[in-house]
Image (cartoon, rainbow, N blue to C red; front, side):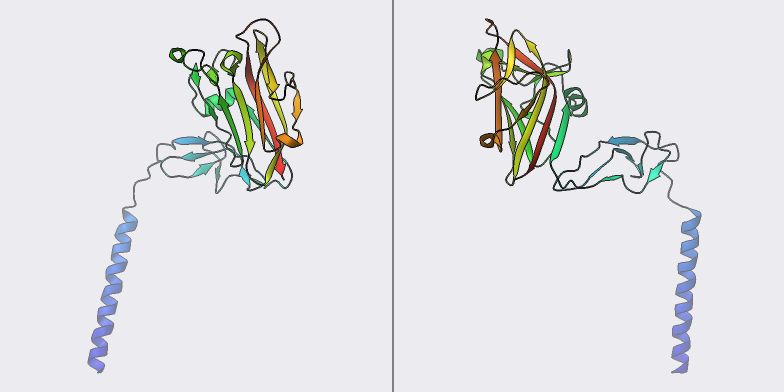
Length: 235
C-alpha cells in the first residue's frame, strides 16, 4: 500500500510539473494584441431613458477588442456607458430630421414611411396616394435640400402618431416650412402653426393623425418637417 501511495504521489507531482511548464510557455507566447496599432472605434448613439427602461449616454466601442470609451479618440476607457435613469413621469422625445437622416443613412429624394422613433411605445408613420402610379409617392420623402421630411396635399397624405397600450399622447410639436400654401392640420381641421405645440385631445390620446391643408389656390401644397417633439405618459 505504501509503495502504491508513493507511485500516486509521484504521478501527481509529475502532472503538476507538466502543467506548470505549459503555463510558463503560454505566458511566454501571449496571443497578439489585435489593437496594438490602435482601436477601430464605432460610435454607439445615446439612448434616451423612458418610463419603461433606463437609457445611456453615447460612447465608442472597439470593433476588435470590444473595449468601451467615453471619447472618440479612445483615450478614456470605461466599463460601461453613463446610465440615464428610468423616467417616472412623462416621456418627451425630440427628433431632428437632419440627425435622423444621418444616423439612419437616409438617401436624398427617397421615401421613408416608417419613422425610426427608437422607442418601443411610439410609432410615427407616413402615408398617401400617388397622383399617378407611374410617378410614385412623394409623401414621406427626405430631401437633403433643407434637411426635411415632406408631405403633399394632392396625395391625401397623413402623418400618424400612435402610442402602445397603457400610454397616452400628451402633446406633439412639429416644426415645418410651408410650401405652395400647404399647412399642417389635425384631421379634425384645427390648424397647427409652425413650431406650435398641439395639445392632444382626449379622443386623440392613443392615435393622432395630421394631414396637409391648403391656405391658397394651389393644389400641390406641401409642408416640410425639420423637427418633431412628442410627449407621452402612462395612461
